[in-house]
Amino acid sequence: GGVSGLGSAASATYNAGVTLADGSTDTVLALNQFDFLVVSHLISANGGGSFVNQYSILMDIELPALNEWVSLYQTNTGNAFNNDGDYWIRDTDSRFGVSSNYVGTPVVRDQWNRIILSVDLTTSTINTYLNGSLARTQTLGGVDGRHSLDPTVLILADESAEMASRARLANLAIYGGAMSAENALALGVASSSIEAVPEPATMVLVGLAAAAVARRNRKN
Image (cartoon, rainbow, N blue to C red; front, side):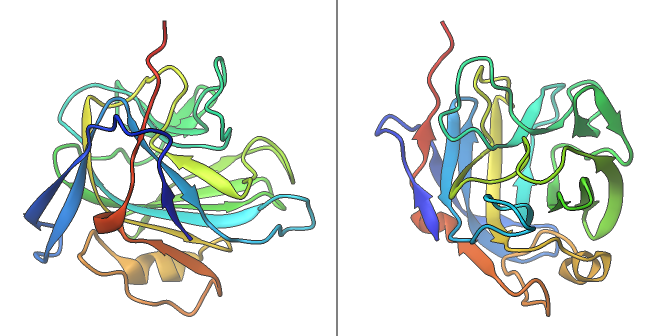
């Protein structure tokens, strides 16, 4: 698995020697409002459907201390007009959700956070973990619905660029199954490494030091 770019005009840069939440240091990717990642995850269709219905997305991310929306991922691979991102951090209170349903533990901005989205569409559920603890549980659509994955997924993408003015990303991992609370706790906080966990069995690590970044088209 890996990251591919949609164009050559990306403005992302690398910041070396950045201290993460556990005190370790790493080289991180700094993105602006119009940058996003296109990830080929190599996970086979699962959950009894034609698409990927059971998966987890881990990201170590730092967001600015500003009241801005953040789309964590977009399942529409064309980032099509009038097709919103699929899971969000809300601008006013930094809580997680989608479809006007935002509750639970908020993200503290201007610090490093490890966010894990654990999705099981066979039970229509997404569990969101923040620094090892459950931030919220939300009901989604079912198998092969809006939140199922094609062979690629867009990270930090929204079709109208309703995004943070800047963000920094240290790690990104996509797992071929819904992560348990025990494993989310074991993975803990943002770190320069992602320790192996017993489950799920399939994991695609995206090395951000070699990432290509796509330039999001500005909405006219």
